[in-house]
Amino acid sequence: MPPFELYTPDSIEQALEISGNLSRENKEFDWIAGGTDLLPNYKWHINSKNYVISLSSIDELRKLNNVHIGATVSIYDLANSPTTHPVLAKAANSIASVMIRRSGTVGGNICLDTRCYWLNQSETWRESIDWCHKCDCGTGADCRVIPNQNTLCVATYQADLAPVLMCLGAEIHLLSHKGKRSMKLEDFFELDGIKRNVLFPGEFITHVSIPNDSAEWIGDYQKLRQRDSWDFPEAGVAVLWKTNPDNTIKDLRIATTGLESIPAIHHKEVGEALTSWKGEDSVDDLADSIRKAVKPVQNTWFSPNYRKKMVKVLTKRAFGNLLVE
Ligand SMILES: Cc1cc2nc3c(=O)[nH]c(=O)nc-3n(C[C@H](O)[C@H](O)[C@H](O)COP(=O)(O)OP(=O)(O)OC[C@H]3O[C@@H](n4cnc5c(N)ncnc54)[C@H](O)[C@@H]3O)c2cc1C
Ligand code: SF4
Image 1: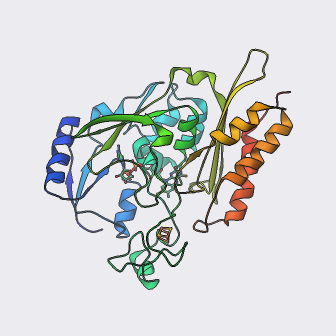
Image 2: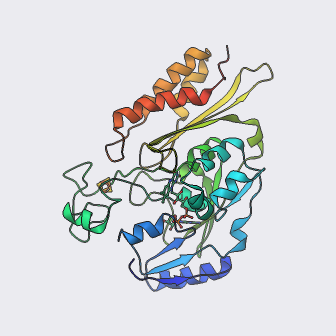
């Protein structure tokens, strides 16, 4: 692993002071939490930095209850807390292996680097194909997926928590030496496999907040992956709904992951389906419109066509017994 200078602040104020000083000195750095994504990338010499600031010793970032999830709450704690929404707990429990869930954090999962099989390889392997745009080692190399261009990276976002959090209406809260800001989680991501999200240098996630009505949402999260023991999602679909007292559908949200450079919430497709909801037939039509809406590319294990087909299957499975007439 390339050497780097590690800072380990134990308060938010210290973290802001260190990040502010590094920014003023034009020294590029990364935040680190559990390190289960950043360190493998560093070991493969993928866009490593000379300075790293750890958030893992800051107690304030570990608060967890039904409306507040601190950025450094471990995925294991989230999955096993009685205050966690059951669909969120299911998604958390499906992430990687238990060892990774113990170290990996909610903030790190939301900010997971996008993945591509032309990139997540050793340095020697990538050198043998003359690199690619996302880590071009100063060569100006083209993207290997969308060829003849070196301005766009379409690496895939393959984290499981975001689609469920988006369906619950979660907000994300950010902090830097310039101040605080908050936004809907769906507005946090940027359709760019390199930049990935709206964070600017020196800004970090403090927590995610969950609206008070989360207990009224029921549903499921379904995931396609190569090996159930620990693989990243090749496709993930969260479906959450609210029902009226007579069990008719009141509201519905669907979000997907593992299919593009950002997770996506499908307001348009759901809105159209809800205007004339016809139970099982609507589920079938809606699952098909989600299949058409997603645009995977050839850069993960399974083919884009298979992943698209499986999106329809996963969406129908996630509806489970909600077939309201
Ligand atoms: C073998 C393997 C299998 C995996 N399988 C899955 C899977 O099935 N599903 C899945 O979702 N993930 C999977 N992962 C990824 C794993 O979930 C993530 O590595 C973990 O959630 C990242 O959390 P972390 O705290 O370790 O992040 P880190 O590695 O510490 O950081 C990851 C990124 O987030 C940034 N970051 C971290 N915290 C913050 C913050 N508070 N504010 C701003 N930026 C921050 C870092 O700068 C870095 O860019 C797998 C990983 C491995 C190694
Ligand atoms: S999508 Fe293109 S630029 Fe991005 S990592 Fe893959 S090959 Fe590289």
